[in-house]
Image (cartoon, rainbow, N blue to C red; front, side, top):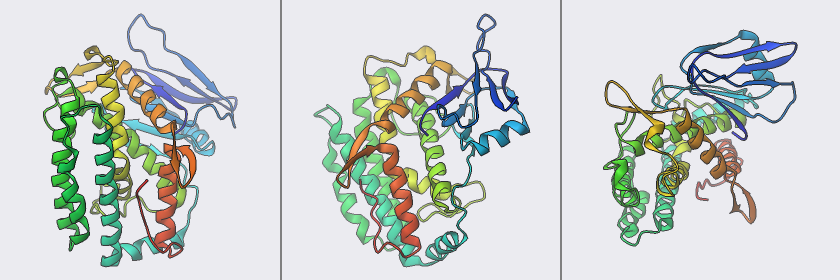
Length: 332
């Protein structure tokens, strides 16, 4: 997402005045005066707006301004899940979408893509565990399930291997998280421990990134190859997200383990005992995410930001479903 503007608190306001986008951040306390921002057209300092705020409004003219300037607007729920992502589709390629639908209906091709996704996810999980400085972590326990992926006869069987590998991964990853954070297993939304809460917020940032790339390459985010289609699901975004989830795990590990840069005061316990991140926590997590995604890694002989690797994989998938690429490989 590049350089994000993070908005928190109550009373957020986004309007347009004299051709400028006028943004008022939310009030976090009665004493604090919220910041204001003024963006000129074609000003490239802000590439995305992340809204974690509780109340406020965006004018219709502001939506138009944001769309014309190709700024991604992401709105998050209190638990960190992505409620909405507004980004302009760069390539409205009808033929590409038709090719995507045809590939989805081809059971062999769909299973082949799904296998490659899971191979990449498990391989990356092994790399993440190997990178953690804890000798008690037993990475080798996951390897047999990576070897079983090619033997899967259908997607349910494939998902079974992935689920078992993930269960082992989290058991080993847990060894690297200090006990004070109460991480005993991976849970979903409305988590009650600090680690899962941060993971949920981080995965939502990654989901928004994947949606932007899917729109950029002109694919349909609702038609995935691993995750089933449902009315409320962004299945293809979840597919692409699987490859890079480990990057979020590293971000959370560093925030919780390197001097405890996220204190417990950055969390708020809700009435149902689940946790949410306060403004300071979302700021720290979003900035750590940007740092990770901006780091350059080697890909096909070149050093490029991790974010660009996600884009490359999106383009490669688009080329594969169109028949312009003979094979698909999500490893990086």
